[in-house]
Amino acid sequence: MFKKLKSKFLLINMLMITVLLFSAFGAVYIITYNNTYSSIEQLLDRTLFEIFNAPFEFGGNRRPENGGAGAFRPREDAPTTGEEQNAADTEAGASESGYGNFNNEPPRLNEGITIFIDTDKNILNVRSSYDYGDDFYNSIVTAAAERYEDAGEGNEIGKTGKLNTGDAVWMYKIIPQRDSGYRISAVDISLQTAMLTRLAVSFIIVALLALVLIFLISRYFAGRVVRPIEESWNKQTQFIADASHELRTPLTTINTNIDVLLSHPDSLIQDEKKWLIYIKNEAERMSKLTNDLLYLARADNDMDGRQTTPIVFSYSETVENVLLTMEAVMFENNIAYSDQIAQGINIKGDPSKIKQLVVILLDNAVKYVDSRRIVRVELSRNEKHAFLKVKNSSEGIKDEDIKRLFDRFYRTDKSRARRSGGHGLGLAIAKSIVEEHKGDIKVYSKSGEYVEFTVKLPVYK
Image 1: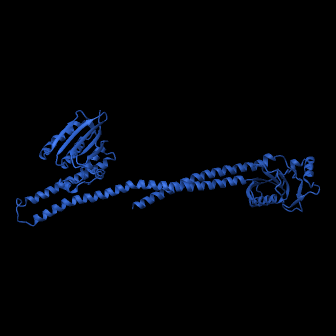
Image 2: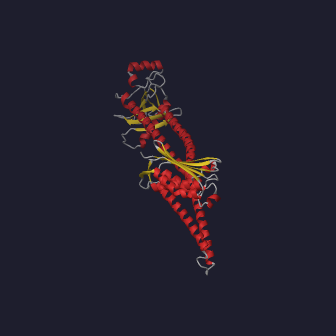
Image 3: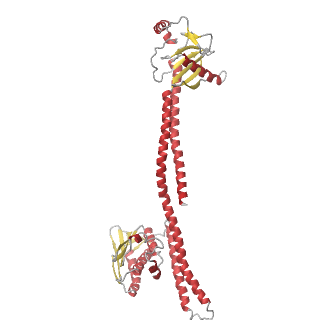
């Protein structure tokens, strides 16, 4: 059951973290993507309208051959060498409007090109600082023209698309000219595309590594979270089993004695008195056990904030009153008893519960004293706390038993506890009372010498 609970906790935790992680990375990627392509759009517009905002006059240095779309050749009167072309450009002003202004220098970063075509998709002129070749310009024109035609007739809105040329990725935009024909701008976006790809891959790698690390951490903490629940469940199961066993014993005795009485229907009550006494003793034992169980149940509820209203009272007088009632018991058991009670110690809490705490500790000391039969009680204080110590001569308690001494129904010697009438709830109740009063209870033991319970409670000034 708890393995399934751990698995469900881990699954839900991983699903939540995965959604949050990829949502965060996705948001960053989308923002970066939008900003990148927004910058590219601005560069395309600047290439179209800002850099080449002067009116363009058709009839540049190259013209299409036989009207074929995109297939063009040099004009017959155009220079054939680079030097002649540059000289002609200088004389005719072609550097401002012609196709012959190439200097064959490598393209500058974020520098676009502009292509002018007529209504038949024939290239009229190209403006670029680097000659990319006729095939490249034809591919840009073909892709842009198809995109524009897909938009329908009479569309005056510029259309944008991408073209992969094998060694580069280009973004282009086509708009109609003011008089006739079209103007196309294109920008190499290979760096931006590579950057976005690297960003996506980095996000995926980081996300996967983070999920692996988070899985290991979540698995560890899932075990930590489920462990207290498992321990509480096991304690509750053990508690129910122990309570059932403790209640079954007196009930079995009562039923047995009743059967004996029923087997003698003609007997007088006086003749069967011992069976009635057995029944009464077991009923009282069962009643005490039931009351202790009810107290622990109420104490658990009090931990949720439903405690009785605390008052200020004398801790010293409460301990002394309990000692007075226990003197006869100690005398009957031939116990050498001594006490040292500091006066004027006041605490804030429930006097009846503190009295019950002292009774439990003294009763425990009397029940489990050894043959030396020595019991000592001491109450002292410092500036902030009061210390109640109840010590008896004893064979001692093992370390493994000390760790579980305050568990419900736990007994270091079950046979002796049954003979003394105990059922293993007294110290659990004592711990509950101490914790309710924001204190601490500890047990110290030395083998063959003594066992000492120390209760530390905050004093009221």
